[in-house]
Image 1: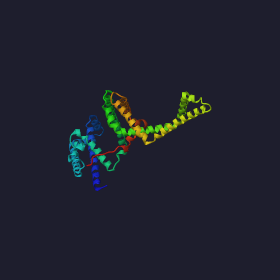
Image 2: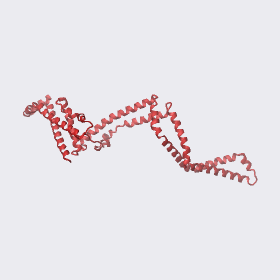
Image 3: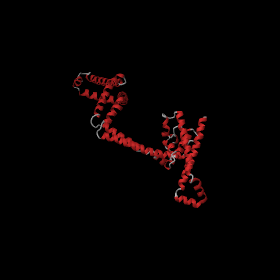
Image 4: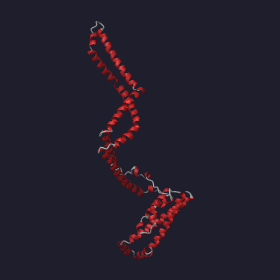
Amino acid sequence: MSLRERGLLVWDLAMLALASANLALIIAVWIDDIGLIHRLIAAAWPTGQAAFQSSVVAQFDAINLGFVAVFIVDVLAGWLVAIQQKTHVRWFFYPFVHWYDVLGCIPVAGFRFLRVLRVFSALARLHRLGVIDVRSWALFQSAMVYYDIVAEEISDRVVIKIISGAQGELQSGGNRMVSRAINEVFEPRRELLVERAASQLEQVINESYQTYRSDLQRYVADVVHRGVACNAAVKNLEQLPLLGRTLNHALDDAIVDTVNSVLDEAVESCTRAEFKRIMKPLIDQIVERLILEEAGEPSELEQALIETLELVKDQVAIKQWRSYFETGQTPQSYAPEAHSITTADR
């Protein structure tokens, strides 16, 4: 730790002690000012009550002004250091960033309790210097749990409100969102999608053909057999003595082999670049027709967007913070490491 950091540490510890003492004094005077408590203390400890009244309450304004003077010096010193180190973009930003310190220096009853923020500010600086680790404090972790509950509830309501507005726009017939989805989301990825569709088509054809090749060949054989059996020319061929039936079977087998060879060749060609070159324009035209159709009247694309947004709303509506109370395990978002304390340097 450098000499400057040690000096700041000593100053922060001193200011933390003074701010804590000042808050304790303010709270003590405030409690004593409550009639019932004042009478109870006077009855239980009259000597101490009288001493407190004469030495503290009677001199409270002067004592408080002494604390205020020290706090003003702290603010001015911090401001000068910030200007020297160019901590902020403009030299006059410091009092706006440290507004709680500035307002806490005003010797008016309504601003006194803002000095509690000075305590938090000092703790944050000590945490940043590594003197303390507030993330390991049970109080801090509990506070973060309830902070995250409030933040989640507010953010969930905002998100659901926005999504509901988008759904309302779609249901009212406005297709601006659909057009934006097409132009800004789909179109930039159109070429990639067509390429992937062609590749997937090639893969599906090859895998399906290899799986059902024997079934398809049997089907082709059955179709050819029926076609040959019903063909009048082939029937006449069977009338030839001795060779008619043999020629008939030979012709039948030749046709079956030819058709199967054509199928094998056709499927094998799907793995060639020529297949993609032919199929990509066809797929692109299909996609373009779908886009043109969807961009007109209310369409399946709009309904799909509405239902997708509804799923998002359902997911957002899930209360993640309930797991903390139901399971007793601290969710990742409530873990000490998930939170950091940051504050502007002096």
